[in-house]
Length: 140
Image (cartoon, rainbow, N blue to C red; front, side, top):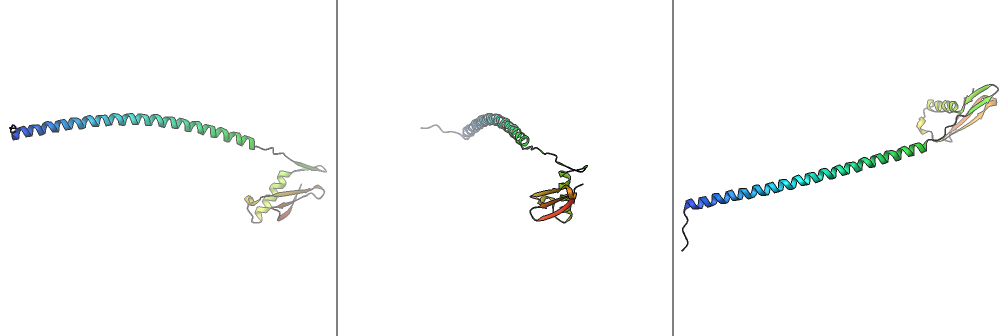
């Protein structure tokens, strides 16, 4: 016949089981914390690698952009017109034509094309903007 257990013995057994369960839970929590720390360290290392790669890529993009910018620099010649002891630059004629175009109510950013015709014998420069708007400016 099986031995009868008393209430005290049952309480003691439950208490021991609770202690064992608490210890098991604590051990499992410690293992989870260790794994979490390992994952955190791995994530930090991976983040560092990604950041280094991003910095390298950023430097490469800056270098490439700088090279493109350097290549886009075009020659900007200064053109002078001299006639009977007087002198004018084509740049000043273009600036005057743009000023007149803007003064007539247009925007300078809307200029897509500009043709300049120099007539030193008339002391004038004629211009056509966007193949529609024409005008005349004093050359000298």
